[in-house]
Length: 382
Image (cartoon, rainbow, N blue to C red; front, side, top):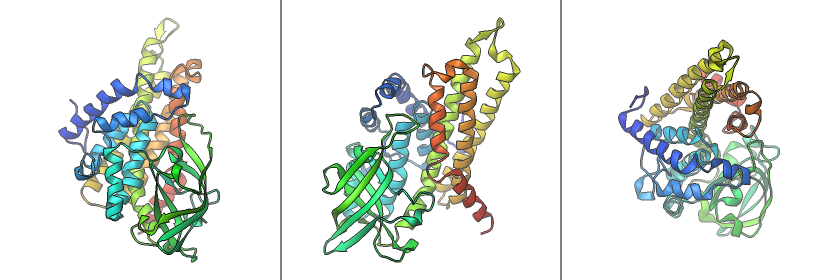
């Protein structure tokens, strides 16, 4: 078994465990789910049953209790074949799992246990029509009314919203308009909550199996105990969780580069033109060589960020670098994979056109790559 720099034998053994799961449970069914436009709830259940959900969550809460290098390895291996399960694992372990683990009260630790013992799907409701990269522009409010908060607002790009067992939502709990006005509240079983209206499924470039919702919150009442951490500190919690989320995105992108490379290698070896495999053409072989170089670079950056987080270091810049480089490289690799496949790559008979659509999303979420470059530059002058 080859060992990657920054990983230990136990991480490589875990990789093999995840890879076996992917080969047996995801590869045979991914195209069926995609054609039906169906979110893979059954696969999430199987991930949990196989002990691959809640990678970094302590065992006492139903997780695996592993480190962040294991987390990025798991996400990478899942995304090598399909991004949706990788995204579920990444989201539940970053913006949701990490936030509840570090800042949640005892009631919310029970949510955490339910998520990972019952293989529940989690969602986040952060973005608004006028508040994307400018997260401080949110207008959703949560006003205190006795022992409850009353939530009103309009959210878009609510990941897994209509499928989720638990939603975390950001809202203003004061009227200062500043970062210290933003709080996070949990909404268990939002489909059953009065006032939560899933207006529509947002049609995505990635495909119909993805669940991204536009949501209206109209006088939604939740217990005051559903406030995560302290009032007014939600923005700080999100920024901390984004370090992990960006590492997860970098791992997704790395998996996509591997998937693009695997598909391109196989096709270039089997496809013949002018009496020779097309890999004998430098125009093709150089594209494959570039994929391999980008793959190893993305891996090193992602594993380095994870190793530093495991060592207790703050990794805001490292995670931003890994996410930005890896997702740009994944977009390039997927585009070239389509080109290598020619007209077949343009069809849905091969997975590379899906890789291309999946890669574009990673350049945008967890902070657009333009925002991440701003983060990187800012830290150069700290």
